[in-house]
Length: 373
Image (cartoon, rainbow, N blue to C red; front, side, top):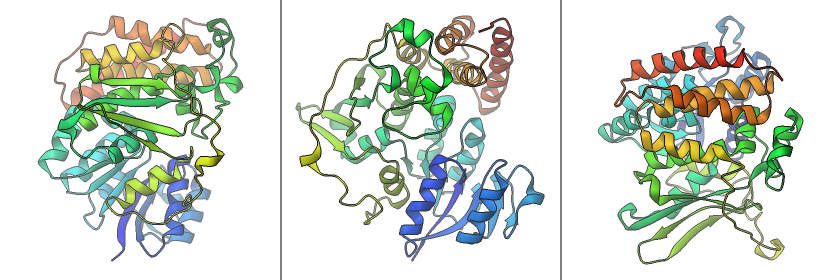
């Protein structure tokens, strides 16, 4: 039988690549619903090609060829075997929880879901016997390596280092938007690419890993690996290290997440060749230059609403940088200032999380308005 899937964010980078994977595996999947923001032309082209029953967009009157439903209705549809959450931002949180409460497995490509509400989400998943399979290449790699989490001593998350790995702090401070978006290895959306440039993406991934694998922060390490071939690794308590390798392509982790626990021949099958890899380099991250990493670790260890503040402040600052309002290094300094001012609420409810998120974004906006490039 075909696995039934809905994709939240089908017009984004992950969503488009997921559809490429599914097109290759048409005999394995049936698409129930597709959703988008305002890219109506692409969404309608996808609907015409893949013929889902349902769809969502910001203006439902512009949807052609599928019945409009809300994100919550799509997420609660028990026809789904799996929901791919590929939207960016806090919009992914409520549908994810809705799907979990309805017993629907999750392929998760939305960082905010676990960064903002990891404790709540993982508790709901456990209570409803739902699998959350990570799509991020790093977490997907760890997921593939782990057989018994109780025997794992350390998680090792790799990072390419982004476009400023060999640049100075001074050069980072003068970087243009174009410089920051010129990632040497991965083709991603703008927001995550900027996070990669500051290494905040690795900090957010550390927080995600803490929740996904129930691992203490002191046992989650980040290592720079410029070639992006080793996507992450784990060290067992006997000293054995198991790593997952592959080309820097999101098709592989996407396919793994939506196919789990099955494996199929896909787009990138047999594209990896050991003899063509000249070298694999590893080094410690420079946390004097990439301060975001330590900031994220601290927020994670502080817990509670600290990670909500981290996410909201960083996101607003990233958007301000992309709009030319601030410089790249201001993102780090603004996020740090907002965390210093934040009064942490421990064990916040879902409503608390959204209220805190809203408050932090307003306060970050006020701070941003005082800064000029």
